[in-house]
Image (tube, rainbow, N blue to C red):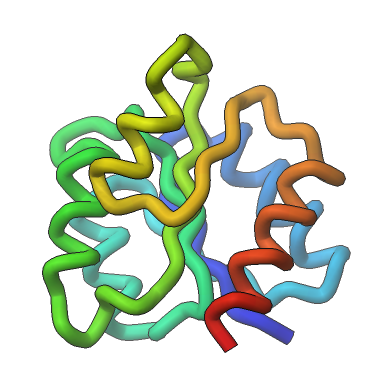
Length: 123
């Protein structure tokens, strides 16, 4: 099954998503901020990255730009996860380099559909 990197600073959100996605058969790796997310992506080579956009330090917007600029990591699909669900936020995430966008709170069936679509497109 596919390996997913979840970059999320909120421990409760991270724990909930990791458990739910593991139950669906995904191999999960985790990072708590943008910088460690890039390091884990380099070490683990995930098939997909779920990226919280509201991270401390290196935020999701900066992180996705660095990921997409990296020749070894640029092809990994990135799905933005954010509580920012205002008009224009999806477009802003896509313009920053994300391949897809989903708003929090997470609706698992909707998220799984987006994950599968990105994984199908990457193969």
